[in-house]
Structure formats: C-alpha cells, structure tokens
Amino acid sequence: MQVLIAEDDLDIANLYKQTLERRNHNVTITSDGEDCLKRYLDALYHLTYGFSLPSSSFPEIPAIKLDRFLTTGPGVFRSVNKSVPYDVVILDYSMPSINGIDVAKEILAINSHQRVIFASAYVKETLEHSIKELKQVVELIQKPFSLNKLVDIIEDKEAYEDLRTLNIDVELVKAANPTHEQILDLLERLKRIQKYRTF
Image (tube, rainbow, N blue to C red; front, side, top):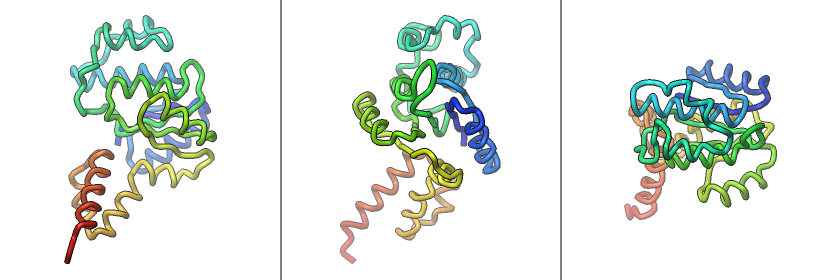
C-alpha cells in the first residue's frame, strides 16, 4: 500500500514508517500540513498526468490558499475520478502551518474517495470537528495506540475478519487488491444478503 503520513513528531513518524515498511508498505512522511498537501498534490498530479508538478509551482502556494491553486493552477484536479495516489492518508489532528482537519478538507475536496485516518489524542473533539467541517465521517485512531493497532486498521484486519465470518475466501478477495472503500462495500452488501437469507 501507498501510505502518506503527516505527523509533526518526527520520532513517532519514523516509528510508523519503520513498522509499515516492515509490512511492505511504501510510506511517505511529512512533518506538517502544508508539506502533506504539497506531497499529495504532486502524487495526484503524477497519477493523473504521468509526471510530477514543476517544483516552481509549490512556493506560490500559501498555507490555506490551496483552493485557488486547485481550481486555477497547473493541475486542475476538481474532476479527479476514483483513483487515489495513496491508499491511506494518516493525519495528526494538531499540526503546524495547516492542521489535520484543513488538510483533510483540501484532500477530500480534490478527491472524496481518498481514505483519511486521523491520529489524535482528542478523539471527541476530532470527531465533532471532522463531521462539522468535512461533512463526512472519517476514521479515527486514538493516541497513544500500539503499532500493531495502526497496521490492523490500515490493512483492514477487522473487515477481513468479518468477511471470514460470512464464509468468504479472504485470500481470494485480497488477491483482487481492493481499496478500503471496495472492501467495506463488499462487506456491507454481503451482510444485507445474509440478513435476508431464508435458508
């Protein structure tokens, strides 16, 4: 999986990176919200057009003014399809330059299919703020958490266990390399079918 992490504590970020890379995930670390958005835009531009944004584009982007860039700049991304440059974006709720909520707001405005997970010690505040600002539910993981918990969430361990309970060949599903959104959709559909079974 391609993972983008925005975490202002470099020691914690490096722990996440080492743990996820041992599980064969590709991890990009950023230390603040502005750098996270720049990396995301560059990866999305590369995915969309096959090459990276010119580095001269980035200095022109002031913090929180990315919306103007997104709608008028060299990479007009408003019409992006369901492709995402990262399988998951993990955001610290409280970061310098641009906080996690504002980063998520910009990313989800570009691509509403992007999976975002907030890592926060302030889960109640993060949940309330994210619902109010983002108008959609995103995933949360409460700090402090174990590195195994982080891996389990990223790799959809709980969803795959639920699929196993429905007698689904999980290895076959994994071989298709589904997105998080597709896994949850499959699980929801199968639960509905199971609910209405009469035999």
